[in-house]
Image 1 (cartoon, rainbow, N blue to C red):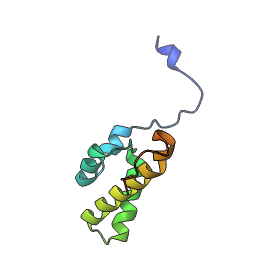
Image 2 (image 1 turned 30 degrees about the vertical axis):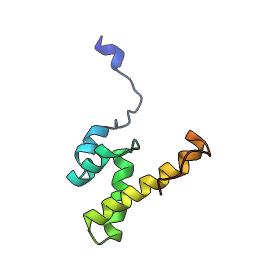
Image 3 (image 1 turned 180 degrees about the vertical axis):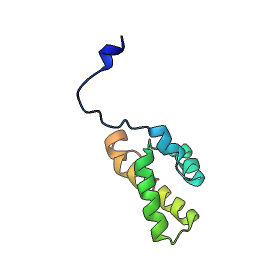
Image 4 (image 1 turned 120 degrees about the horizontal axis):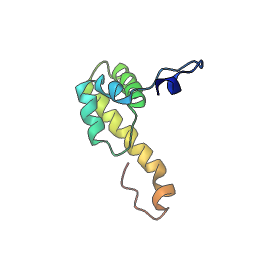
Length: 91
């Protein structure tokens, strides 16, 4: 049955999300494990790098900024998901 898998089409590299996750720094993996939103390893790594640059390498400050970014995203989606009357205690 191997012949069924042969093609002349160009194959694109397959994404391996767990490999990307495994390459994240331990602090970031810990934050991601506790996150309320389903962040991708790629998007959270981009934010992490930006926050580290902005905080001159202070990991605690970068983690605090990730918390703030997540709270803002939750607050933005709150009216669409739960309705306008839901309490806004996230920010």
